Image (cartoon, rainbow, N blue to C red; front, side, top):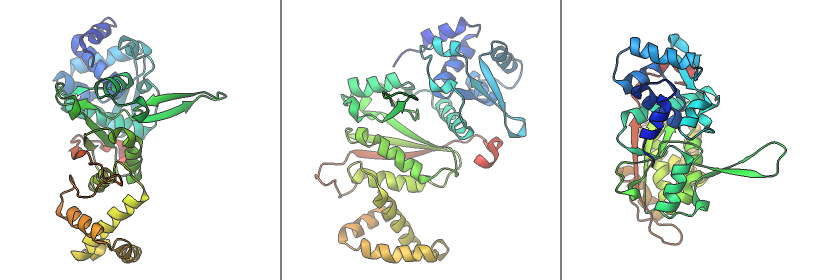
Length: 331
Protein backbone atom coordinates (compact mmCIF):
# COMPACT_ATOMS: atom_id res chain seq x y z
CA UNK A 1 0.00 0.00 0.00
CA UNK A 2 1.33 3.42 -0.97
CA UNK A 3 1.75 6.34 1.39
CA UNK A 4 -0.81 9.09 0.86
CA UNK A 5 1.63 11.94 1.55
CA UNK A 6 3.10 12.35 -1.98
CA UNK A 7 -0.35 12.34 -3.57
CA UNK A 8 -1.65 14.94 -1.15
CA UNK A 9 1.31 17.13 -2.08
CA UNK A 10 0.53 16.67 -5.78
CA UNK A 11 -3.08 17.74 -5.22
CA UNK A 12 -1.93 20.81 -3.29
CA UNK A 13 -0.22 22.05 -6.48
CA UNK A 14 -3.74 22.49 -7.92
CA UNK A 15 -4.50 25.12 -5.27
CA UNK A 16 -5.97 23.03 -2.43
CA UNK A 17 -4.82 23.12 1.17
CA UNK A 18 -3.70 20.00 3.05
CA UNK A 19 -7.15 19.11 4.40
CA UNK A 20 -8.87 19.69 1.05
CA UNK A 21 -6.22 17.68 -0.80
CA UNK A 22 -6.48 14.83 1.70
CA UNK A 23 -10.23 14.70 1.24
CA UNK A 24 -10.00 14.81 -2.56
CA UNK A 25 -7.57 11.90 -2.50
CA UNK A 26 -10.00 9.88 -0.38
CA UNK A 27 -12.96 10.71 -2.65
CA UNK A 28 -11.13 10.07 -5.92
CA UNK A 29 -9.86 6.66 -4.79
CA UNK A 30 -12.97 5.35 -3.03
CA UNK A 31 -16.08 6.93 -4.51
CA UNK A 32 -15.66 9.78 -6.99
CA UNK A 33 -18.67 11.49 -5.38
CA UNK A 34 -19.38 13.14 -2.05
CA UNK A 35 -21.89 15.08 0.02
CA UNK A 36 -21.16 18.42 1.64
CA UNK A 37 -21.56 16.79 5.06
CA UNK A 38 -18.84 14.25 4.22
CA UNK A 39 -16.26 16.99 3.69
CA UNK A 40 -17.40 18.57 6.95
CA UNK A 41 -16.86 15.24 8.74
CA UNK A 42 -13.39 14.78 7.25
CA UNK A 43 -12.31 18.36 7.99
CA UNK A 44 -13.95 18.41 11.43
CA UNK A 45 -15.80 21.65 10.69
CA UNK A 46 -19.35 22.91 10.72
CA UNK A 47 -21.07 24.32 7.66
CA UNK A 48 -19.63 27.70 6.88
CA UNK A 49 -16.90 29.63 5.12
CA UNK A 50 -14.34 26.77 4.92
CA UNK A 51 -16.85 24.43 3.29
CA UNK A 52 -18.16 27.09 0.90
CA UNK A 53 -14.60 28.04 -0.06
CA UNK A 54 -13.68 24.42 -0.86
CA UNK A 55 -16.77 23.82 -3.01
CA UNK A 56 -16.33 27.16 -4.80
CA UNK A 57 -12.71 26.25 -5.55
CA UNK A 58 -13.75 22.88 -6.99
CA UNK A 59 -16.32 24.49 -9.27
CA UNK A 60 -14.14 27.41 -10.41
CA UNK A 61 -11.32 24.96 -11.23
CA UNK A 62 -13.84 22.85 -13.15
CA UNK A 63 -12.74 19.83 -11.14
CA UNK A 64 -16.26 18.68 -10.29
CA UNK A 65 -19.86 18.58 -11.45
CA UNK A 66 -22.85 19.16 -9.19
CA UNK A 67 -26.06 17.13 -9.28
CA UNK A 68 -29.21 18.14 -7.43
CA UNK A 69 -31.29 15.68 -5.40
CA UNK A 70 -34.49 16.01 -3.38
CA UNK A 71 -34.75 18.42 -0.42
CA UNK A 72 -32.20 20.84 -1.93
CA UNK A 73 -29.38 18.32 -1.47
CA UNK A 74 -26.48 18.08 -3.89
CA UNK A 75 -23.93 15.44 -4.87
CA UNK A 76 -20.50 16.61 -5.98
CA UNK A 77 -18.80 14.44 -8.61
CA UNK A 78 -15.03 14.77 -8.98
CA UNK A 79 -14.65 14.43 -12.75
CA UNK A 80 -11.45 16.27 -13.64
CA UNK A 81 -8.67 14.10 -15.02
CA UNK A 82 -6.19 16.50 -13.39
CA UNK A 83 -7.26 15.23 -9.96
CA UNK A 84 -6.81 11.59 -10.92
CA UNK A 85 -3.48 12.25 -12.64
CA UNK A 86 -2.17 13.57 -9.32
CA UNK A 87 -2.96 10.14 -7.87
CA UNK A 88 -1.43 8.33 -10.85
CA UNK A 89 -4.89 6.93 -11.61
CA UNK A 90 -6.03 8.85 -14.75
CA UNK A 91 -8.40 6.10 -15.90
CA UNK A 92 -10.33 5.35 -12.70
CA UNK A 93 -14.00 4.73 -13.50
CA UNK A 94 -15.02 6.98 -10.60
CA UNK A 95 -14.63 10.06 -12.78
CA UNK A 96 -17.20 8.82 -15.31
CA UNK A 97 -20.95 9.42 -15.15
CA UNK A 98 -23.01 6.65 -13.57
CA UNK A 99 -26.61 5.80 -12.73
CA UNK A 100 -28.10 7.05 -9.48
CA UNK A 101 -28.05 3.66 -7.68
CA UNK A 102 -24.32 3.37 -8.44
CA UNK A 103 -23.78 6.87 -7.07
CA UNK A 104 -25.61 5.98 -3.86
CA UNK A 105 -23.47 2.87 -3.42
CA UNK A 106 -20.31 4.96 -3.75
CA UNK A 107 -21.57 7.49 -1.20
CA UNK A 108 -22.20 4.65 1.24
CA UNK A 109 -18.65 3.42 0.65
CA UNK A 110 -17.28 6.88 1.42
CA UNK A 111 -19.33 7.02 4.62
CA UNK A 112 -17.86 3.68 5.68
CA UNK A 113 -14.28 4.76 4.92
CA UNK A 114 -14.73 8.07 6.73
CA UNK A 115 -15.99 6.25 9.82
CA UNK A 116 -13.18 3.66 9.69
CA UNK A 117 -10.13 5.65 8.66
CA UNK A 118 -7.55 3.70 10.68
CA UNK A 119 -7.78 0.63 8.41
CA UNK A 120 -5.24 0.13 5.63
CA UNK A 121 -7.33 0.21 2.44
CA UNK A 122 -6.46 -1.11 -0.99
CA UNK A 123 -8.69 1.07 -3.18
CA UNK A 124 -7.05 0.48 -6.57
CA UNK A 125 -7.01 -2.56 -8.81
CA UNK A 126 -3.20 -2.55 -8.87
CA UNK A 127 -2.92 -2.65 -5.07
CA UNK A 128 -5.40 -5.52 -4.76
CA UNK A 129 -3.81 -7.61 -7.51
CA UNK A 130 -0.34 -7.06 -6.03
CA UNK A 131 -1.50 -7.97 -2.52
CA UNK A 132 -3.15 -11.26 -3.45
CA UNK A 133 -0.63 -12.43 -6.04
CA UNK A 134 2.60 -11.27 -4.37
CA UNK A 135 1.79 -11.27 -0.64
CA UNK A 136 -0.70 -14.14 -0.38
CA UNK A 137 0.58 -16.00 -3.48
CA UNK A 138 -2.84 -16.43 -5.08
CA UNK A 139 -2.65 -17.17 -8.84
CA UNK A 140 -4.01 -14.26 -10.87
CA UNK A 141 -6.47 -16.64 -12.55
CA UNK A 142 -8.28 -17.00 -9.20
CA UNK A 143 -8.98 -13.29 -8.75
CA UNK A 144 -12.50 -11.88 -9.40
CA UNK A 145 -12.43 -10.88 -13.05
CA UNK A 146 -14.62 -9.19 -15.62
CA UNK A 147 -13.85 -9.13 -19.34
CA UNK A 148 -14.46 -5.92 -21.30
CA UNK A 149 -14.66 -5.88 -25.07
CA UNK A 150 -14.55 -2.70 -27.09
CA UNK A 151 -16.94 -2.31 -30.06
CA UNK A 152 -15.70 -3.81 -33.34
CA UNK A 153 -12.84 -5.54 -31.55
CA UNK A 154 -12.11 -9.22 -31.04
CA UNK A 155 -9.79 -8.62 -28.10
CA UNK A 156 -10.85 -8.54 -24.46
CA UNK A 157 -9.46 -6.58 -21.56
CA UNK A 158 -9.55 -8.27 -18.17
CA UNK A 159 -10.24 -6.11 -15.13
CA UNK A 160 -10.02 -7.26 -11.53
CA UNK A 161 -12.12 -6.35 -8.46
CA UNK A 162 -14.45 -4.22 -10.57
CA UNK A 163 -17.02 -3.88 -7.75
CA UNK A 164 -14.50 -1.63 -5.90
CA UNK A 165 -16.06 -2.43 -2.52
CA UNK A 166 -13.79 -1.64 0.44
CA UNK A 167 -11.00 -4.19 0.85
CA UNK A 168 -8.64 -3.54 3.73
CA UNK A 169 -6.34 -4.73 6.48
CA UNK A 170 -7.25 -3.88 10.08
CA UNK A 171 -3.61 -4.64 10.92
CA UNK A 172 -0.84 -4.33 8.31
CA UNK A 173 1.26 -6.87 10.21
CA UNK A 174 -1.36 -9.57 9.61
CA UNK A 175 -2.05 -9.82 5.85
CA UNK A 176 -4.01 -13.05 6.30
CA UNK A 177 -6.62 -11.01 8.21
CA UNK A 178 -7.69 -9.16 5.05
CA UNK A 179 -11.31 -7.96 5.17
CA UNK A 180 -13.70 -8.07 2.23
CA UNK A 181 -16.96 -6.18 2.05
CA UNK A 182 -20.26 -6.04 0.20
CA UNK A 183 -22.31 -2.85 -0.08
CA UNK A 184 -26.11 -3.09 -0.20
CA UNK A 185 -27.52 0.28 -1.37
CA UNK A 186 -31.12 -0.45 -0.39
CA UNK A 187 -34.25 -2.62 -0.58
CA UNK A 188 -34.63 -2.15 -4.33
CA UNK A 189 -31.72 -4.51 -4.93
CA UNK A 190 -32.06 -8.29 -4.87
CA UNK A 191 -30.42 -10.97 -2.74
CA UNK A 192 -29.39 -12.46 -6.10
CA UNK A 193 -26.93 -9.57 -6.41
CA UNK A 194 -25.18 -10.85 -3.29
CA UNK A 195 -25.25 -14.42 -4.60
CA UNK A 196 -23.63 -13.27 -7.85
CA UNK A 197 -21.00 -11.43 -5.81
CA UNK A 198 -20.14 -14.68 -4.00
CA UNK A 199 -19.93 -16.48 -7.34
CA UNK A 200 -17.49 -13.86 -8.63
CA UNK A 201 -15.26 -14.18 -5.57
CA UNK A 202 -15.55 -17.98 -5.21
CA UNK A 203 -12.19 -18.85 -6.88
CA UNK A 204 -10.34 -16.38 -4.63
CA UNK A 205 -12.18 -17.38 -1.44
CA UNK A 206 -11.41 -21.01 -2.21
CA UNK A 207 -7.68 -20.23 -1.95
CA UNK A 208 -7.86 -18.56 1.48
CA UNK A 209 -7.66 -20.09 4.95
CA UNK A 210 -9.86 -17.40 6.45
CA UNK A 211 -12.58 -15.21 4.93
CA UNK A 212 -13.95 -12.16 6.71
CA UNK A 213 -16.83 -10.29 5.04
CA UNK A 214 -18.43 -7.03 6.19
CA UNK A 215 -21.98 -6.45 4.92
CA UNK A 216 -22.43 -2.66 4.66
CA UNK A 217 -25.97 -1.30 4.38
CA UNK A 218 -28.20 1.70 5.06
CA UNK A 219 -31.74 0.32 4.94
CA UNK A 220 -32.03 -3.36 4.13
CA UNK A 221 -33.80 -6.48 5.30
CA UNK A 222 -31.53 -8.76 3.29
CA UNK A 223 -28.49 -8.97 5.55
CA UNK A 224 -29.85 -11.91 7.57
CA UNK A 225 -30.52 -13.96 4.45
CA UNK A 226 -27.12 -12.89 3.11
CA UNK A 227 -25.47 -14.23 6.27
CA UNK A 228 -27.19 -17.60 5.83
CA UNK A 229 -26.16 -17.78 2.19
CA UNK A 230 -22.59 -16.79 3.00
CA UNK A 231 -22.12 -19.63 5.47
CA UNK A 232 -23.90 -22.12 3.21
CA UNK A 233 -21.48 -21.02 0.50
CA UNK A 234 -18.49 -21.66 2.76
CA UNK A 235 -19.77 -25.08 3.84
CA UNK A 236 -20.23 -26.07 0.20
CA UNK A 237 -16.56 -25.42 -0.55
CA UNK A 238 -17.05 -21.85 -1.80
CA UNK A 239 -19.75 -22.86 -4.24
CA UNK A 240 -23.15 -21.24 -4.57
CA UNK A 241 -26.21 -21.95 -6.66
CA UNK A 242 -29.99 -22.15 -6.75
CA UNK A 243 -29.82 -25.09 -4.34
CA UNK A 244 -28.41 -22.81 -1.63
CA UNK A 245 -31.23 -20.32 -2.09
CA UNK A 246 -33.84 -23.09 -1.81
CA UNK A 247 -32.23 -24.55 1.30
CA UNK A 248 -32.13 -21.22 3.12
CA UNK A 249 -35.71 -20.52 2.05
CA UNK A 250 -36.75 -23.89 3.46
CA UNK A 251 -35.02 -23.22 6.78
CA UNK A 252 -36.64 -19.79 7.15
CA UNK A 253 -40.14 -21.04 6.27
CA UNK A 254 -39.80 -24.09 8.50
CA UNK A 255 -38.76 -21.95 11.44
CA UNK A 256 -41.68 -19.57 10.80
CA UNK A 257 -44.12 -22.49 10.71
CA UNK A 258 -42.72 -24.12 13.85
CA UNK A 259 -42.87 -20.84 15.77
CA UNK A 260 -46.46 -20.23 14.54
CA UNK A 261 -45.62 -17.15 12.49
CA UNK A 262 -48.24 -18.21 10.00
CA UNK A 263 -48.49 -14.74 8.43
CA UNK A 264 -45.08 -15.42 6.85
CA UNK A 265 -46.29 -18.62 5.19
CA UNK A 266 -48.77 -18.03 2.37
CA UNK A 267 -50.25 -20.70 0.13
CA UNK A 268 -47.29 -20.65 -2.27
CA UNK A 269 -44.82 -20.81 0.63
CA UNK A 270 -46.73 -23.70 2.22
CA UNK A 271 -46.60 -25.64 -1.04
CA UNK A 272 -42.84 -25.02 -1.24
CA UNK A 273 -42.41 -26.03 2.42
CA UNK A 274 -44.22 -29.35 1.99
CA UNK A 275 -42.13 -30.19 -1.08
CA UNK A 276 -38.88 -29.14 0.64
CA UNK A 277 -39.58 -31.29 3.71
CA UNK A 278 -39.47 -34.35 1.46
CA UNK A 279 -36.46 -33.11 -0.49
CA UNK A 280 -34.40 -32.33 2.63
CA UNK A 281 -35.53 -35.27 4.76
CA UNK A 282 -32.11 -36.78 5.48
CA UNK A 283 -30.28 -36.56 8.82
CA UNK A 284 -27.59 -34.43 7.17
CA UNK A 285 -30.05 -31.63 6.41
CA UNK A 286 -31.71 -32.03 9.80
CA UNK A 287 -28.36 -31.43 11.50
CA UNK A 288 -27.78 -28.41 9.27
CA UNK A 289 -31.20 -27.01 10.17
CA UNK A 290 -30.55 -27.38 13.90
CA UNK A 291 -27.22 -25.64 13.48
CA UNK A 292 -28.81 -22.85 11.44
CA UNK A 293 -31.61 -22.47 14.00
CA UNK A 294 -29.16 -22.22 16.88
CA UNK A 295 -27.50 -19.27 15.18
CA UNK A 296 -24.07 -20.91 14.99
CA UNK A 297 -23.25 -20.39 11.33
CA UNK A 298 -19.50 -19.98 11.53
CA UNK A 299 -18.64 -23.70 11.62
CA UNK A 300 -20.14 -26.85 10.26
CA UNK A 301 -19.57 -30.57 10.28
CA UNK A 302 -20.33 -30.53 6.57
CA UNK A 303 -17.43 -30.34 4.15
CA UNK A 304 -17.08 -30.08 0.41
CA UNK A 305 -17.15 -33.21 -1.74
CA UNK A 306 -13.40 -33.71 -1.42
CA UNK A 307 -13.71 -33.49 2.38
CA UNK A 308 -11.27 -30.61 2.48
CA UNK A 309 -11.42 -28.33 5.48
CA UNK A 310 -13.65 -25.31 5.00
CA UNK A 311 -11.97 -21.92 5.60
CA UNK A 312 -12.67 -20.06 8.82
CA UNK A 313 -15.49 -17.66 7.95
CA UNK A 314 -16.67 -14.49 9.64
CA UNK A 315 -19.71 -12.45 8.59
CA UNK A 316 -20.36 -9.07 10.20
CA UNK A 317 -22.63 -6.14 9.43
CA UNK A 318 -22.15 -2.39 9.43
CA UNK A 319 -25.16 -0.06 9.30
CA UNK A 320 -24.58 3.40 7.86
CA UNK A 321 -26.23 5.83 10.25
CA UNK A 322 -26.36 8.86 7.95
CA UNK A 323 -29.55 10.09 6.28
CA UNK A 324 -30.11 9.12 2.64
CA UNK A 325 -33.73 10.24 2.35
CA UNK A 326 -32.68 12.67 -0.40
CA UNK A 327 -32.59 9.67 -2.75
CA UNK A 328 -36.37 9.27 -2.45
CA UNK A 329 -37.62 5.97 -3.88
CA UNK A 330 -34.13 4.46 -3.83
CA UNK A 331 -34.35 4.26 -0.01
